[in-house]
Image (cartoon, rainbow, N blue to C red; front, side, top):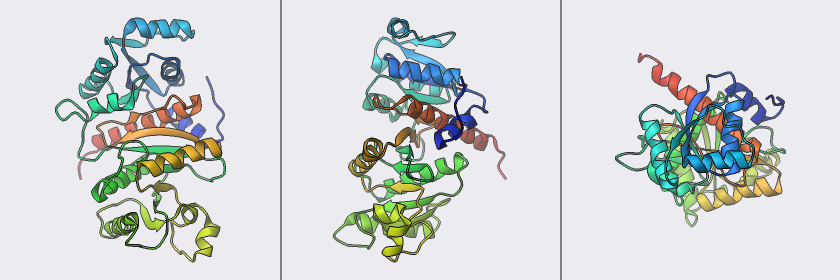
Length: 314
């Protein structure tokens, strides 16, 4: 199966196809969207699926929707909770280097991911990134965190930024321009997110956050519109040309991403960072291209992490 190579998503998918397909544990792929996404990603060479869930239900779903399971490995698990547990265990054992959400609730999968004794915690806070294809914007737009951390504090926001910087670099997109959003661009004591934005920028100045160019607080308009930034008199390498938007909280991020999706015809690929491996986190509302782009992003980033780990220490 081939795809055109014109959009940002197409380029990511084409790049992932040049890599060796990584084994991916898919937790409870028991509906058409999740199972077809896993199998299409396999057919495109993006990953090697390990289908974890009730075997009978998986096979029935494949038969109902005429999906070709081929030689895909199936790990039988009686229900969604057991599927999440088994999928995480496959990652911990090294049998899978990617994890993907199937037709179970996000909380159910993430409960197993963050379990202290048996999960996939690392030294970082776990966070989510939307990689958005916005028709009216020249570059992929990264929005974080709109799915995991509800009201992140300053240190959590610092890890959210570190995670997204590492992803942007790992995808080969270069040093990102990171806008820390608020309602206004002035530091205003009555709006706490402006104070946190200023503190995060100073942390970057001091080397506590590295790899990206930060500016904030910035309102959305002067983060993404050169004209708005010019009218406001904001001079920075980020204002008007941001590649990453760091939102104040989950509610703001979720609304921003859905506004772009449903009012601006954007597509939203999703990935969870900060765990031992990238986690492909898709929604039932996602289209096939968004799901494939999520798989491609995870595959490229997992390959980047593996290369880093294999690199000898200086």
